[in-house]
Image 1 (cartoon, rainbow, N blue to C red):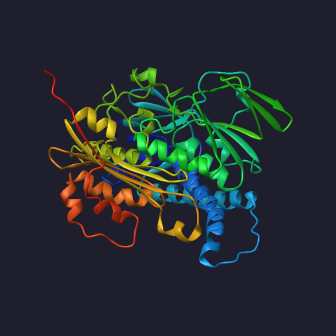
Image 2 (image 1 turned 180 degrees about the horizontal axis):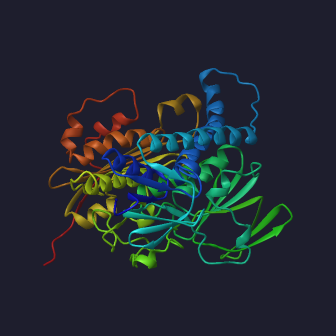
Length: 462
């Protein structure tokens, strides 16, 4: 008789947990995965996928406007929010079913229940109070929206979760936050016709991104009519029937039909029973503390993805889940390299970035060369739209290695995915220069910028 009911019990049916379950099962492990909400997790159900669908749809209004410059006469268009929501729900349901089917095809078992840890080898299903023993437990419960400190009227505020299920498109919306989610939804709602105001506590949006990217995105968003108020926060939200008044720390107030907070997400560690097994929390970020192989402070318990609060990106969770299964069940140690992870912000305009910012590079390297260009894209020369693309390379002036690439404009994410390969391979600026341009494209600028726009040399301390 087996010592444990299963070899692996996965808590959380998101992208990371699903990948780990499938790969482990492929190695012959007996695997059970529990999901209390819907298979697919945040990314598939109420994150990356529906968000990108919303973004694509919100571009259509601009496409219609731009068409006139190319000779098209298009009748007055109309938009139905309810149709968007219904079609999005249909696609998400299809993906959820596919996730479940793929896990089951791998030989793993799916249970629809919340699971809590009883001890280092036991979990309990709340659905039927059943206990299951496991040789290993993997926590992949992701993250959840964080509204921050309680303020009067916080109960009137929605998060990105609710934004995907609104009954109608708000004519006016106030969004607090300056990161990925806030700016992406600002572009989404503005694209569909809402009046959008973004509130951010810092001096500029996209904290942690390259300074040129931050400035460029803000300028382009403001050109589109999005109001961005920095250096202040929401202190109170009053409701008046179907309308809201948002009070700001600078003494002003705003009227709107919805108020959304997107100020960050916190690791989903509450009420998992971590204390029952002695699983340690990282005091620095509130996530489950893990080593380079995603092992927690308890040998039999691992954690991957956003619940560790390391790099909160879906592809990172997937890579960590795969590496975990390879290491524990494939009997070969695989350590995820978290350096030079490409990322995109599907704001409008879109951002794609990989590697170091200029500020980071100057702090780490004595010689840093900057290659930067801003130009009007070819489409705008006919459409007449007032917009510009930004492209920037950060280069180690001593070795010629490309340390970072930052792009703002159409298809920035697609371009950056390809460039990330070169950056990961430690390509040099000479390698970029030796690559023949693909013309006419925006991306050709990356291989035609010959002269540095800035050179920084850090003097050695005497």
